Image (cartoon, rainbow, N blue to C red; front, side, top):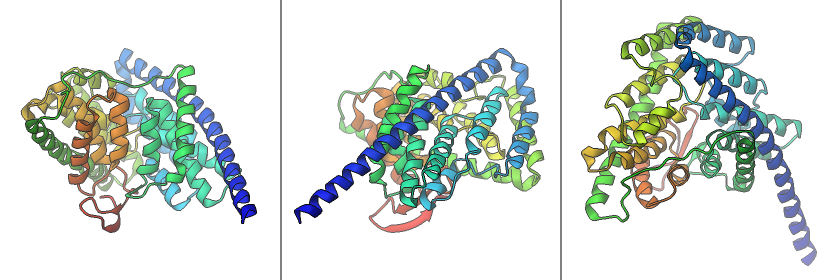
Length: 417
């Protein structure tokens, strides 16, 4: 009996050491690639701002992206969905996805597409780590874990929020069930990747909010609950439009080259009609203004439409920062209607809408802590919880599964709408 006990402990120690090595390798490799990606996207954004004429090349850039994916024998529209499927069902991720998303996302940003970067980082990290697992001949369970490590590392390195990144990699795949066995390797990989990225010139994302209440008064709880309801409705609208707009373009133009070129042209026309480049690229500058309490009343709507077109027709990038943009500008513009200070409402909107579209409440709470410093975190958690519960079974990622009902402890096992 004692011998069996010690044999089990030695085996567990071996597993621990193995994941230390795997997570360290993933953290260093993905952190370095994500840091390079960060600098390339930064250069692309700078070039776009300095040379406005690059926007007119967006339709042509779309044709190049579609051609690249066709030659690489990869579906143009799968993106992050493919990474989620690879974890849940142990589908192989081709290594060619990493350079493909790297180059095509940079081209999207260079030519003014309305897209973020974290979704691309999830794909980068998942593709790199998934192939490392394949080369090491890991079994299907360990392959899933190592892919989650890469997702966490990519998110953490590019956005600078390792806690949120670690939880997100485990929470987003199957809502209601988390792969807790992946907690240690995901956290270690995320922390190492974040550290590597900082050494190589990366950044930690953080915002200073004003007007955060020190304590929860009864009236404030009512205001926060109502604001959470508004964020839940907005989250559902975001998901619906993200899916419907892309579907309509593809229905009207089945040819993927025509579809992506026309979609790019529509983004160009909207940019010219609106007379601003606020909605091109990721939009971090607009988020910073919103957090300071300044946002145009229609900013959240135009970002939603332009990002839905950009991503829906096949341009590459991420959805997460645009979602944060939508939540922040909505909160800053309309938080006053709920009796909230615009800056505080912008922060609430960021994390609550993020939760509503990704169905990841624990990640959203971690995100609020890392982005805003943790002051009155329970108030953020309240709005996040309301948004999660009332946003329905919609989601940005069509391959995400909701395993348990949001309303009661009932197994439902359904994909998001």
